[in-house]
Length: 155
Image 1 (tube, helix red, strand yellow):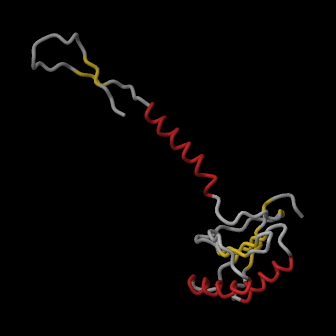
Image 2: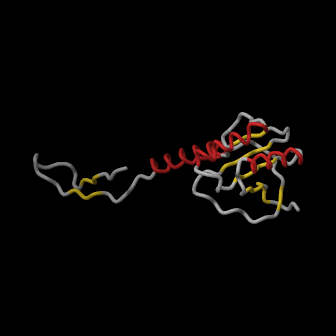
């Protein structure tokens, strides 16, 4: 992006003589538009990939949304086939017996059990299994439990 210089006169005359040059007041916006379109396409392609976590069909409920935190929350996800995933990015399941041990290690690394644990349970997961997971989280020392749902018209 630059400005071009408009020359006055017919180009004739003596050599070495300076002519009065006036800058043009036009800006070429085509490169700017090209860059913006490329960025738009990049963001449209990458935005769906930013959704993190284990894909679950969460139950719907009418409730007030929790306030956001500064650090990444501790998330325990339960799939419809009763597999437990610890953390948002975790793709390998954890057994029910190892859950309390792993949560205690996370608590030691994060500095305590005062932060809330968000439990994401699939709609079709068994109620008894979810209560066992909640008991193991409580056994690890966490007392602030929040069940994650989708906002909707549910009960």
